[in-house]
Amino acid sequence: LAMMILYDISFIRCMKRLKVVFFFVFCMGIANPIFNRIPVLNFWGITLTAGMLSMITLWMKAFLTVLAGYILMEMTTMDQICYGLRCLHIPAGFVVLLSLIYRYLILFLKETDRMMKAYQLRAPGQKGVHFRVWGSLLGNLLLRTMDQGQRVYESMILRGFRGEYYLHTGRVSKRDSYLFVGIWMGIFVILKLFPIVYR
Image (cartoon, rainbow, N blue to C red; front, side, top):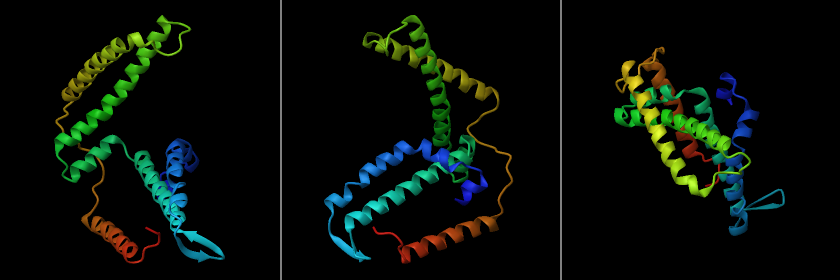
């Protein structure tokens, strides 16, 4: 919640974008009370079973995990993520591969949209793509995407890209880093010693 407030991230927009994921998690957890009916505790005359507690725990963990991933995507760009991975001494080849996959994925989607529009203009009134042209469309899509990707990579090389990321951001002091790690280690130890959710 603090990060969403600091970075002005809309909670309602987040729920709209992640509703499919939350629905899938809801369907997975709803089966737990049916299969696990072992009573665990009595709460104000209501008997809570192990299936109910595991369902609630699954919902909470999935909700917080997906929400944390969404906040990370909203707060940081792909270049910042790659820069952070290099600061953690992840091999440069892996980081470059991740960056290029992200860039080429956008090219792939744009080329797909362009080819689908061209196909619809050549086959007006037809719903979907005829199965006879699936092979040629996929082949052309692969070739066009590879050509476009090669041009993007060459332009990156011409602009001085050598597999490293240099972001002009203020460096965090070691004291702040140690304080950050210490606080979170303390939180994790407290949560380990005093579990607040049912496992």
